[in-house]
Length: 77
Image 1 (cartoon, rainbow, N blue to C red):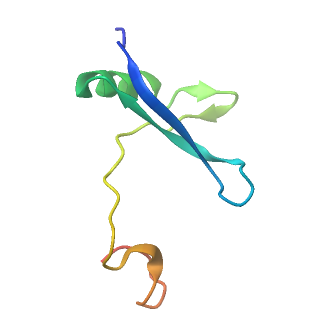
Image 2: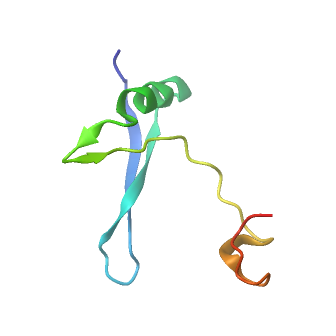
């Protein structure tokens, strides 16, 4: 099973310290390549830590997001 091409990769960093936050985003050339990467890498052990690899969900804006307004219950209804 081979994966053709990563089109972009971004490691998320803390905006105050610049240190990595422990996760990132990778875009693959095709959806099928992304699914192959997930199945090959999810749960794989790297330096004593299991990777959690999954498809990113679209970012929600507005509404109850960010935990504000409703007693700090978070961004879920």
